[in-house]
Each structure stands twice: as C-alpha cells, then as structure tokens.
Image (cartoon, rainbow, N blue to C red; front, side, top):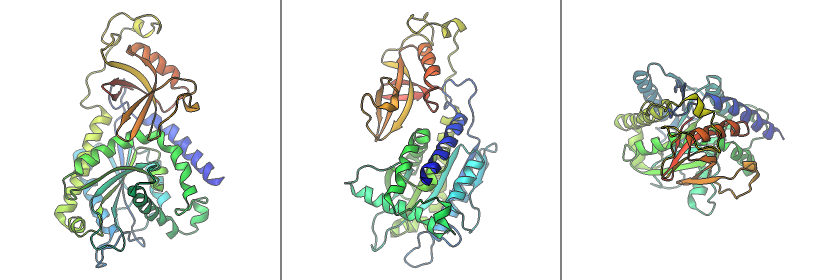
Amino acid sequence: MDILRNFLAVLSAAAISVGLFPAFGQGSSSPIKLSTVVIDPGHGGKDAGCISPSGKTMEKTVVLDIAKRLAGKIRAGYPDVKVIMTRSDDHFVELQGRADIANRNKANLFISIHVNSVDGKRSGPNGYSVHILGQYTSRNKDLYAGNMDVVRRENSVITMEDDYNTKYEGFNPNDPESYIFMNLMQNAFLEQSFKFAQHVDREMKGGAIRSSRGISQDPFYVLWRTAMPAVLVECGFMSNPDDRAALVSEKGKEKIASDLYDAFCAYKKEYDGVDSPAPAVSAPKQEQAEPSVKPEATPESEPQTGAYYATQVLVSSKEMKAGDPFFKGNKFSAIRTGRLIKYVIGESEYLAEAKKNYEVLKKSFPDSFLVKVENGETTRIR
C-alpha cells in the first residue's frame, strides 16, 4: 500500500533524525543545542482558513501576524538560533511542503500556528488548544468528535492542491483508514512534543485567550510528516466573539506571541540543559563493573532511596500488556504522566549498571534513552 510505504519512509527519516536530539542536558557529555526552529503560519494565499462572521478577518492573516511576532522574539532573544518560517507573506504552501521545509533544514522543533472555528453557532466554544501527533481514543467523549472535525478541516487543505490524490499517495482527510498509520509514528518524537506542548499550555493559560482546552493527541498530517518534535497550536476560536476580539487586537496578538516565546524559552532551557546540574564523573573502572557486582560507592554508583535508573523505550496513551512483543521479551514498568504512559526497561538502582543495560538495549530500541525515575517522575539523563 502506498500510504504504508510513505509511512515507512518517514519512520526511517525519524530514526535517523532521533540521533540529533540532545539528552535534555541531563548528564550528556556533548549536548546538542536547539539550533533550528520552524514556525508554520497555517493556510495562506488561496486558503483563507477560518473567516469571521463579518468576512473581514481571516485566519491566514491573524496567524501570520502572530508567527512573525514570535519569530522576531526568538531571533532577538537567541541570535544563535536559526528561525525559519514556512511562509512570511500571503501565499499558499502545501501541507507536505511545510513538513519538507522543516525536514530539509533538520529543525529541532516545529510550531504550527492556527485559529479554530465552529459553524452554525453564535458564540459557541472558546479557548486555545495544543495538539501533538496521535489518535485520540476516547470516542465516547464530545472532545473526540470535536477534535476530529478540526483535524479534517486542517487536513482538508490537501484537497486545494493540484493532483493531490497522486501527490499524497491515497491519503484522504475524510477517510478514517487514512489515519491508522499515523498511530505508528507516535513514539519517536512524542515525549519531546509533549514537553513543549506542556510549556505552551502553561504559558498561555490566563493570557489573551484565557481558557485552555488542554493538550490533545490528534492525527494532523503536517505533524505526521515532520521528523522532529512538533506541536500545532489553535490559538482561539474565530467563531467566538470574545476570542475573536483578542485575536484581532494588537494587544491580544502580542500576548499570544509572548506566551509562545516564553514556552520556547522554557523548552530550550530544558533541551539545552542550561539549568541542569553538572554531570557526575566516574572512574573508568566503575564503568566496567559487572551488573551483578555491587560497584564501589560513588555519586554515580551509590543507590538512592526511592529512585532508580532505566531505559525509556516508549511513551504512549495506550496501556500495554505484559508480554507485548514490542518489548522483545524485556520486563517493563509503566509510569503515568497525565494521559500518557512512559514505559521503561533495564532498571537498576545503580547508574553505572543502568548505563551498561542502556548500551545493549539501544541497539534494539534506537530511539530509547536513559532516565532517572523518582517519585513517579522521569528525568532524562542521555
């Protein structure tokens, strides 16, 4: 099937790109900095996006304004960060083209900016929402139907492109089967995407658009095709008069851009490890110690009460069963973080032993990484 081959090509690119990610500064010997961000103002040109009831305000104009403000703030605050916009004026960019720009530039982060809307209601829902790649599973909840309406609307931009059936190899934004393969792409960048989404949700809360609709996993095509952490932000509802007033005002757009910039700053600190403690240094002999032999007590080898080290291999909203073939015979522990579950294997109370386990496990799980688990929270080490 063409769409499966398409998926495998992206998965291959993701596996290669995952090596570009840093250890979020936690003990990495040569941390990689967040050096390139792609900002994607939705729609443009012949695609107006959402339009206000009066017909005077278009989504494409609002999001371009916010995106330019955000880009300017990042360039001013981080001169060493390369900031790329998928469009800087009012022209149409294909969905695949947006992802291609990010992939071609080996971006470390992709931020897609949009405005939401519903039809047939005078005021209707309000609030901003943050979306990462995935398939929302609570089909009995109203949010599922609402989110899929948004997903179909944003993905339907494809149909405005010439020869889209051939170009997108059978992907149909209105066909549920077209979304099945997106589920398989969740693991590679889900955790990093979720981290940035958390910062966005936290910073925007109580701002120009005061109400948060939360963080959701949804199958947006542009997020699927970007081989990096990626988030789509619906800044508010064009169909809601209060949200619309904020979206069209200078003060409102500036506040949204400022909140997104603050989220970027917080994420970059975490990504680069700016505020992280100095990594522990161990003697070579301790690195060679056999896992079955208790290492000599050092800051790295001494066990910590209530804490242990492990290799994280998966983060998903799905509850996995013992013996699932994904884990290749390894026993796992599940750590819940909101709606997401982090799965770890190769556990040890000794860091030196956990590192040895990780070196073996990463051959079978190339997008895995070492974590410290304490009080139900995981901290990435490398």
